[in-house]
Image (cartoon, rainbow, N blue to C red; front, side, top):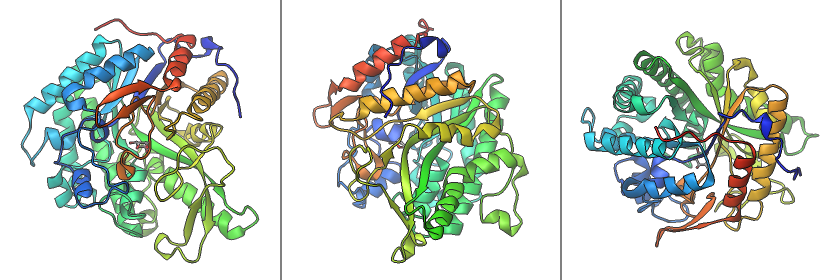
Length: 438
Ligand code: FCB
């Protein structure tokens, strides 16, 4: 474990983006028009929690922007909720766009650079009913949405993330069944979804650049360090290598090489039109997992994921452990994407840790890893901690707590965890430049 103090401030460029990351469904509250609200209604949240008001951002994101400002961050990542902006196909809600304009202005007023995600797991109900990203028309529909958002918000933001974790969206929704639409073992469907996400991303990339010349556009890639459960087992090693390539590189390799996602590439498909459609590489990095062959896990193609109990871990998920905390893995994540030759942003990193047992160590060690990478000349431009206040953690509901601030969803009271003070101090020591109100 690396506990070294983070005092080599000069290594961080003054305009390094120090931020916190969030997503619309997890923080806004009061929206029943997306597939996650429907999933919750069907009793699919493992904790049986309701998203309810979430962190009440739709009415009052500004109270959390104040908290973020008190930490000294100069950037904040949020997402826009498609189901609010286009509640029915072709029907645009100007009031929703106006609310997002208000939020982005509020960030600028507090010296924070907004990073806006266009799609963070949620789909409007009408879009889900059409088959979501399995449907070929999803690409044009997402393009229409993108155009509308950039036209409305483009003067207030230039950093755009098209999709959050396309690899998680496809594998949890169509292979592991943990996310809506809850399909299990649909390997080919997951690949088709990934292909359409690549095409939708590339279209969005071009649309944004057509409307905004100096836009900075990428996506957020979830990266997991995989290790064979029994390194002496050839089967575990093979499975581990397979999962590593399929999960960590499936979307990325299409953007890098114009290749269709496996197994569609084996069927002769390619995607030359998506090649090089990114201005930066965005990485979400949390954990390391062991991969083993398990003959009883038929539905997940004999794959079993585990975490050795003696390894550092945050709180466990309701059914499965969240993962080993392994800050050194950040280097592997960054190295995985060096072939892109693009600036790198860590768009998410954090740990579920209600009692703040290991979060301080996670933050310090991760920042120390970043210092090492910067010293070696890696073009690292930003770090976003997930997250500011506890929020609604998808299928885990309120069970997993990732916040620098503890949130009581019933009273909406916020209480800083020790990590909040620590993160503020480290940002200050790194010499973060907070821009004046614009
Ligand atoms: C990431 C998601 C984010 C949040 C964190 C804990 O995979 O992008 O919404 O759930 O995990």
